[in-house]
Length: 350
Image 1: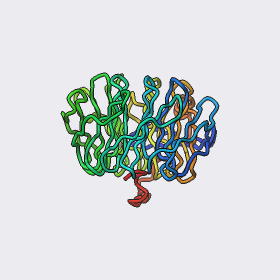
Image 2: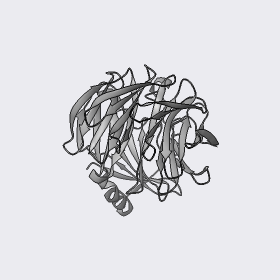
Image 3: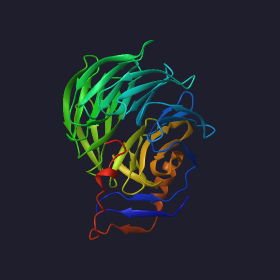
Image 4: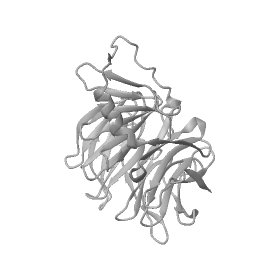
């Protein structure tokens, strides 16, 4: 555990800034950008955008156990534990690779729209939803014996990510250039609502139990909290500069957002809609996923070709230490704002 500094924003709760050492750092392929976890088998799947591979990590042993060749420019991955399949969005080849996670082998390659950038799975219908940034659409894929595309849904401009709430049959698509979320009825494959959020929404995570969706707004340095029953933003959480990816731990009511401008991982208490800690990670952190049973978060360190494994079991300890810490430092409102990131650094995908 590194130095703990308690900061106080005027009239706001304090936040713990923590310099900590990862549990482990795992070397993977070139340009790891996204990760998905199969909690049932304790395996994580990492897309390596510049080596056109997926690294398979045994999360109990924290080692790479397989490397699978996929399409060109894999930038997103989602797992369906029940069917033992993973779906990889290959941006450069405009396709989705379907992996048999029991055999670590590709069983199908499905054409998608232009520049597929995000993917999510409905675990009840076993369908995958692919955000096609270049064609302003979402592809609906059937994961049956012969995986295939079923439908194409037009959404906002430059859709970058998608999240699914299977309990209410909805999908949430982050439209990067429209500053909005398209809400899809996944039974009728139709857009039923459009919700305005912050600037450049690039990632979305859904908590079905609390009826919330969390949207990382890259250019607004914020996370929008959506009430999925009302299709309305109910809170906006300020985070660091350049939030690029977000994941939710349903067991602990925590969300984790990678912050590219600060090389950190923001820890959000979703009960209070507040950042309670910021953990130092690698340079320009990208995708993130959590594994509740092992109390781990997996953060993509894209420039270094590695995955940082973070102990999320320390969250409660960090929060309690923050409250007990005697020395608080006022935020310097006269300090210069963080440097604006260049377009090339804004996101792994766009």
